Image (cartoon, rainbow, N blue to C red; front, side, top):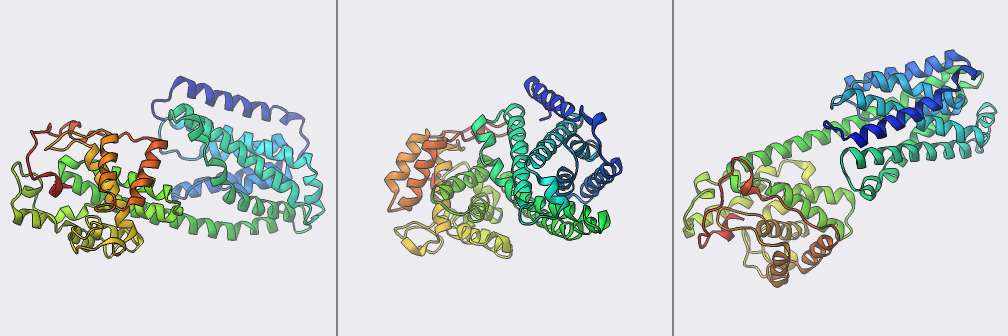
Length: 435
């Protein structure tokens, strides 16, 4: 969003105007302004604290408590200070702040309207459970829907993502955490209106802060995992310059196969790691062999064929990789037993390795190398289907064909990137060893 298109700026302006319209009735609103100030200060304080500790996301319980306690214009005002004052890493910072503030103001305003229209404020004052859950649930759903719609719009316009893809899954992914925050916000509102007052309501934030800290630790650990993998892949790309970008594309193709097979999200992520790291063992292969211009001798080929074992040794201690480690070791095995390093057959080959083997071969055929030009996607798929049952698992080949028919494939031509040498004439005996 650094070079923001004019239509995206216009979209942000429209959202900002909508937020201003939500705030216009403020002078006529009768509400205890100290409550608005306290909730706004809590929200802003959390945003600042979260930014300093690099926590992820916005702390919605305070905003939703405002929606349950205050008239809609006052509730919308609660969201503004935190969003406008919070640090923003990516540029343009001002535009991002304005959009986030306007988005939250509109979302909280809509939630407060729905909550008031369904009798939620009376239920909060009377601590009328379980009825109080109904208007609160409706408000949370509307809040989540508004945020998802506005997020999808900015993705489509600023990032030029197709409209259907921009909105796909946004609502469902955000619903569960927002519902949890909504329950905490409802507890805050009920205690706030109880004889115990705001002090008791603030106690609700303590367990939420602890859970948010745990959530942030998880994201930090995940970011560290990604950084570890990125460093390993960059090292491989530097060493074997002709396959630059190959690892990431194999990870993408592995994900496509895994999704087509109906695997769960956690396993899909592991298979993405497997695809990205499958060639990490090339760090143990002499560079002169990876870049050799002439045909490989049998002894040189045997040295290169050790790279799956080198790779497994490198990643075996990285626990979060799970079955990806087996894929690194066995992705050159073949169903007929003629592969390496152990000559496994059929079901002896781990499923993760069979997925990566197909993804690896597909990208090797459809990207330009030093010894040949890229094949068309259709030709590569025909070759995979021809070798299905002997070299590749037919299920994985079929899954890739189906996934590509739906989503397509647009591989980068790595040898044509700036600074990478142009392809040389084909050299016999090279293709199998270098993949």
